[in-house]
Length: 451
Ligand SMILES: [Zn+2]
Image (tube, rainbow, N blue to C red; front, side, top):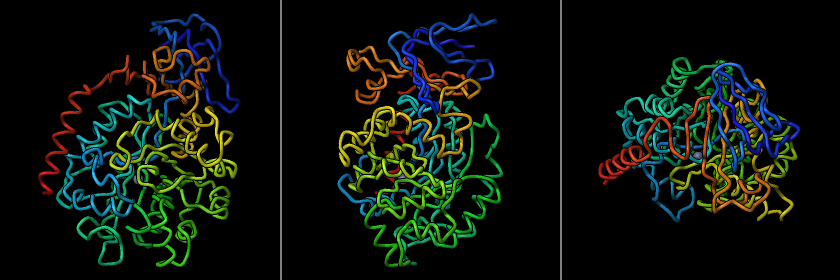
């Protein structure tokens, strides 16, 4: 049992409950026993007491869009559009293997944990023929670090020869991709409420995947009871591609293929007209908002306040890591707020809305809102205790404002299912320096192989 006390708390429940000085009790079953003001009732049994003076406890952040393998190719094509960036990187990614992906995922996941993330998805869609089991490699990294993990089995089957963007060397055969996706679900997906590992089905994008793969992937996911994810409406180039090839907008194309619904969440959703936003709202389709990646690639700014008004579940994603080198989920709270205000003025988003996007919004996108995303008795004890009494934050009296408006806050403690994954700003289950060296070796090996 863990009792955190003398701490500010933002529950992010439906009522927006907050405590200036409160406690959280975590049971041996990894679930929250109680959250409230003042001291906890004296619990029976062996208890670890954590003094949270100077800190804020929030639900653990949920990352709804990422490409962990890209940690091995950061800092390239720095001044390109999405299509220019992709065509530079595809030939490098064609040399990926399980060792490289494992090292990149270890670094990316470690960095996410240190940035306040307790649950992350990963969108992996490059499966070189001789690359080994890259999905297994990233799952092993997540198990080691202790994060709740929702990797997706992605895919691409529309190469340049057929009018797609990726070179033919990095795309898969359609039926082989579907069979491998089904095998990944059968092998890994755990649907239980406490699940640490859930698989989703994630063909990459309209310009790298055939319509047949999209629609059959949707049928597969629904037959298996898993969720669906893809990139959609990210750039003007994608709008033009869909208009020329399909005669419609990306959202109309997605709907035609069975890709709108409460079991779908889409990465980006930047270029959405009013009709598209209304369709996402009416169907309960979620959006992974990735403001730093969208800024890095100059893709545009998503209409998040409008999406929220339409009832769309919106989560935050760091995306990347090669299209957003920082990949820091805590920093994405502020980036989301700033992006909304740059478009719509200071009333467009407040700090608590940004925090809700990063927690409950993400849990809704991943289909886990009943179990994570807020601090409530009975929910899984996925929480983060942020230190706010240092030079960067002290003196900002509202702790939620300090977290969102201030610099990325140090993580004093992060729990996943009641188990510590970060303590005192350091990873519990891995050495950050060792993760750094392994990822550095993977980067150099990949670049040398491509040269
Ligand atoms: Zn992406």
